[in-house]
Length: 424
Image 1 (cartoon, helix red, strand yellow):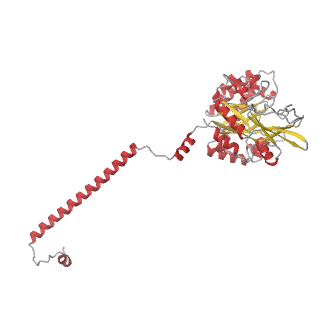
Image 2 (tube, helix red, strand yellow; image 1 turned 90 degrees about the horizontal axis):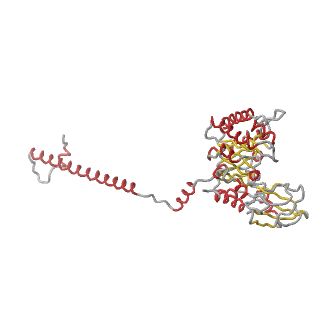
Image 3 (cartoon, helix red, strand yellow; image 1 turned 45 degrees about the vertical axis):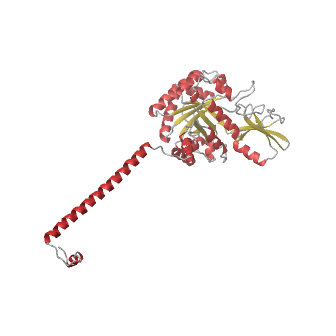
């Protein structure tokens, strides 16, 4: 119903009152016109939206995303498949709370728990007190490392070790001892959510026991038993760099069939008790000396190259020597460990140290005098570490391992070298 105000607002200037039917027709026509205008407007809006939507979809379907060079570089780096970078973490480094960088490693191997000749794992001494290796394996600090490793996707392995020939011989040849070790390891794997087991059985001297006959069978049995519950478990074994050349104790062809990784301990070609100074991990050497190249070559055809891991040292040795000449005879009993950290600190404090580079071994050495005595240090630096990683890459090995985490101290340079060089 129209109000008075409505009527007055619609009254034409000519004071003529049209017939009622004329007004009705006008209203009808006006309504139709408004409806038509609204319909056209709706159609126009719909058509515009539809076109925009189709065009955008077409662009998305055919467009190659534009990525800035910086982002492309980042993607390429992250997408690169890294080789194994394994760090051995000895119990004493855990005791010292040495800084560990799980995010830079594919595996951390805790080193390690010893065994008895009956295959039992040594956790306690005769006084029923926990041995140090067991204590630090259960320490809060190692728990922190394991948590960090879990976040970075780094696997945690446990090393089982023995340096006693008789113990090793009994464990590998006695079925009961082998089964006991497998059972105890199975419990630890479940309890600590371990990703693998590393075997470090080292003979100090040649042995008449038929080790080559039993060791491979032992590894086969151990691997089979442990993988019944955890099929994806990693099994690795450490082998001495010069023993593999002689092949007195290890049948490497058979051993490599039962393990995922063979870790070549490519160091201690010279030791602290050596009669002559020299590099602990020479890539090449003179004809009368052993080298990393010789050790790797001796395994050719016996160990698949992708299973072979090159363990490199974060240390060397220092001696008191008779002369300042390279590879001088040493003073008996003067040898000592020279970690990466020790040498860096030594060089920062002594301006009289004379540094040299051996292009055959691809390693550095230095001399200085202390209270009149001649000192020689054969060590590892960033350049020699890079040379070893390149050697592993050039020979298409499975990666590297480090002995030992903590020896670098707070210096980050070795990790930068590893991150740069250790790529496929």
